[in-house]
Image 1 (cartoon, rainbow, N blue to C red):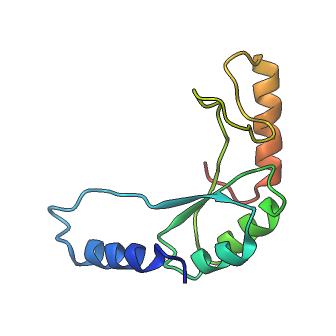
Image 2 (image 1 turned 30 degrees about the vertical axis):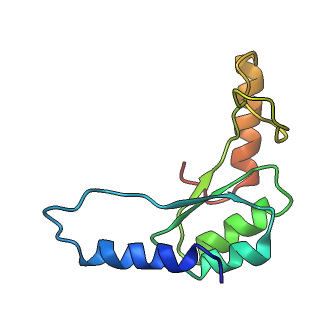
Length: 119
């Protein structure tokens, strides 16, 4: 079991029991989907209120986005952005010096690689 799965389920149970008048809105998004299908399939067994963010250039992006959608989870595109610190960058990381055309190309590619994405 994912180490955080028990905590996420407990938190979701607390949300369900909270008063609607006092409750705020909260989104739970598990990101970096597309690299580890075995682990990600465990997330997809969790309640469908949990959304997933798929890295569009990951090896299993299309497969995991489709599985997430078919499991009732909301699918988001995780577009990596350049960090302030020196770190290895994902393919097609958005960077401040990119042209509008280059950014548009990356976004179009991401939308094509992550089916069922709503955002």
